[in-house]
Length: 414
Image 1 (cartoon, rainbow, N blue to C red):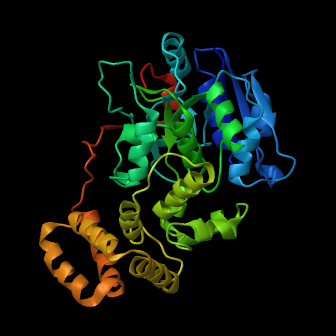
Image 2: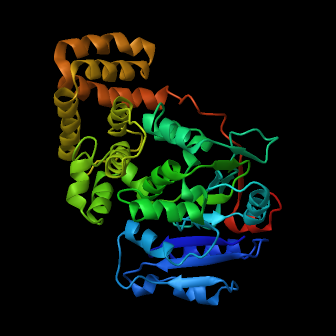
Image 3: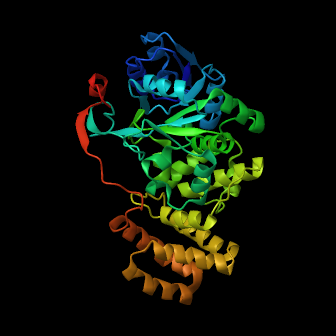
């Protein structure tokens, strides 16, 4: 059984060097590494690290011209020849022994999607990403007495699209299930997806669009009971920065093909500062484009879009942009939702506020209608979320261990 481990990257050569160091400790031998180096600045190419690595199974490739992120992911996929394919961002390092553990399970229990949770490493300071930091071992939500647990891909997709909880409230297992960046896809599943849709990754978020297609077309899936990767928390993450900085989200969207169409297709058009609004766009777009069988609960998604506008750590590029995005949301709720949907929207917001705050806000909603309510609700709601609300799936915070990233390579248990 052969694994293809794919690293699409740009301008992060030291991260690729670290990823390869982890792979040198893998005890399973039948795998290939594909590094797609999408650089625009030759000084930040990772080719040198790939060439000098002790690993002999590296395919170093470079697109003929610089690509957007999604296009680079699709470009790299064509070089994979393994029975199972794994995708990693360049801040994800495969924990030694993972492939050996997974291969043993798959030999006896083949499946089309296999997922694992991630461990996390947070450096004490940036940009010293590989020095001292806090390591938190990932914990799956499945029983510790099981090596793996099967799940229904269609049911998992239904829950994700319905969005009973927001993205940051999802439990560890619910978050990773279906994602190729947190596991592996069977080669036949990828072929089936591409025969039906043309490619595996689509705009805007390749980890979400591939997840939606994977769960839609897969017939079987499982999650193993141990972490498979360590994820480095940095200040470089596209997703992390876009979550809190509107100008970063705008820059990323403009780097993609057909960007103007992407803004129009958002749940709330042109409200690009909300990650929930962008992910909801991916669900809606793929459902309509390929007639996929799931239903989006747009009331739930709109509630999370509302929360995004004042999420903890939010940094607006200007007060004018902040005001514009609030007005976009207010106008959408006021003009695009019918009376019943608006009632559901306010009721859902009410459920997520502390009890002592809801009565006055409800009176305000009735008196001043949608736009005035949102201007009052959003900052106050975000403050209460940060201070009091803890998601329904949140668990006791795992214990962290202070170490150097290099120390993980010397550990027997990850």
